[in-house]
Image (cartoon, rainbow, N blue to C red; front, side):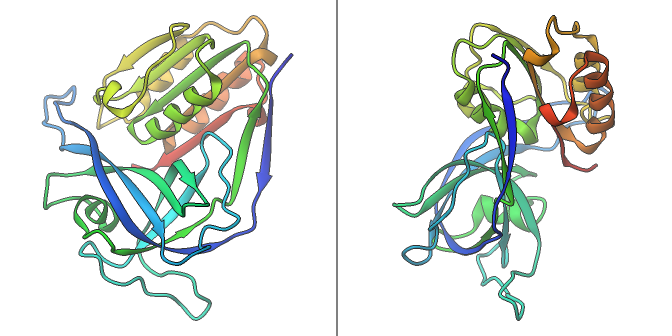
Length: 269
């Protein structure tokens, strides 16, 4: 039976949270293809806890790529400024929901931090790396959810470092019996991030190129054979914004409607 992919809109919500815990999962650094040294990066898992009982009431995130927007006041943990309508002001970042427990009042997100210790890029990155526990933050979303039902005959999952939390969550939801292709443009050790590809997935690790982010993913996708049955192939392909147009062309060549796939630009160079 072909799978279904259903999009569900959610009522917007603004929630007051605080930083409850931080765990560094993995670090990665290396050289780009042109020989330049890459910036140090690491993934930090943050547990955000409700600032008051019931703050997460009604929160759901059933889809593999469900995400929230997080706003903080400062890297040092200062207060979040709100406008007259109660919406937060300041830099925000979109993060995939890793896990959550509404009853206990927490949500986990994995934040990709760019830059060496003490020189992290962006307010959110610095906050994720070194804000004191208890620092306030504001969370908005998810705006909606893309829910996969059924069991695809095969999957093609492709992503760069920004997509790794969603990749891990999709793999967990799809189960150990899935078959297909897993294309990852990354230098991170997958095991340290809790990513364990099922035996039926053909794994390809692609070397990131700072000058052409996600280009390796696009090339690898274009090189894959067309599906035997387009209705049975589920595609998740997310990375830098430039990935979207060529992946849609690949989907068209494969006879897959873009509405039956998940293709997004998680960031823009």
